Structures are given as C-alpha cells and as structure tokens.
Figure 1 (cartoon, each protein chain N blue to C red):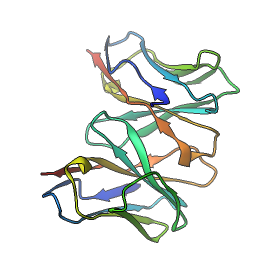
Figure 2: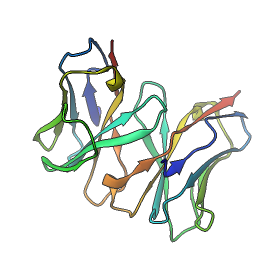
Figure 3: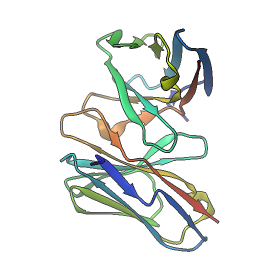
Figure 4: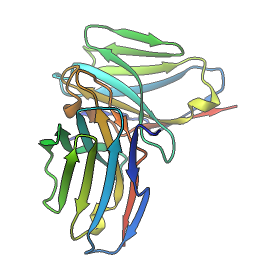
Length: 112
Length: 114
C-alpha cells in the first residue's frame, strides 16, 4: 500500500541505451513530478504534470520524455543514455491545495 | 547559482541534546519553507513547514525558526534521538500552493549518537 511507488529501484545500463522508469501514486493526487538528485545531492525538478498535462519542463534534454497515461501514473523514458544521466531519480506527487510533496523511494540510475 | 543553501553537509550530535540545522536562501520571493527528512534508500518525507508570516512553527520535538531579514531558517530537534539520524533537506517556494516551484538545498546529514 505504498503511496508513491517507482520501479525499478536500481538500473544499470550502457551508454546509448534507452530505458524507462515507472511511477504510480495511489493518493488520488492531481500533480506528479520527476526530480533528479545529482552528484552534489541537490534535488532538482525535471517535470511536473497536472491531470496528465505537462506543466513544467525544466531545461531537461529532449532525450528525457515523460508520459502520463492517467493522473495516477507518470513514467520517464530516457533515450540514448549518457554518463551524465547517472543520478537518483525521484517521482513525487501532490494533492490540490497542498504544499507537501510525497516522494517515491527513488531509482538509482548508473550509466556505464 | 543555488538559491537555497545548507552550508553544513553533516552534523553529529549526542542523543538527548539539541540538533540545529541551518538553511540560507537568496531569493526574496520565497514565502514558504519546508523541511524534508530522508533515510537511505528512501524518498524524502515531509517534516515541518513555515510560512513567512510566522517566525516560528513547532511540532513536537521539531521547531522551525524563520528570520526573513537574514534570509535564514533553522530546524531545531530537541531532544535528539538516534532515529533522527537522516539527511535533512530545506526547501523553499514563492507561495503555499506552489509545489511546482520548490527549490531544495543540498541537505545536511545528521548523525545522532547513542
């Protein structure tokens, strides 16, 4: 009964590959996010979706494409993976009128 | 250009003592501040927040203080417990309902020794 779940937890892949990370929330929230935690440990927003519509795209390369089939899911597809994409990616959600984000447990992506 | 800074990457405190975690920000448009706590291999979880109309907010052992003129906030944990050992992130946004615009600091790792 995890509120925000993302899979896989660990992802190790070669440069140039294409991979996806899935995220689901069962909180009934309208807004979902993808955050990236870089090597300096800062959490930076990548995308925000509200009711399946893209709200924010924060200077993320086109190789990253989020997809929201419904408001409970926000998946992240990454094409042509690069070494610099190695990071921990967190999915999060937020209810309308609320300030709190609820985070998934993260996906550690390692590009070799 | 980091708008939210946590200048202490780590802090070690004895159990039962007070832990003080600090956070500075540069953007005067920030109006709402939050603290998140993160255990290893887990996502950050919300801990406590404060609006700029207040200078203090308390929730059990956790108190957040805001000094708007200094653009500084701090999280006090008293008494500290070993289970408080985690990474604490400070975050700021321009208003209460601006989850889309949260800016996070780099985190402070707190270690509470038994």
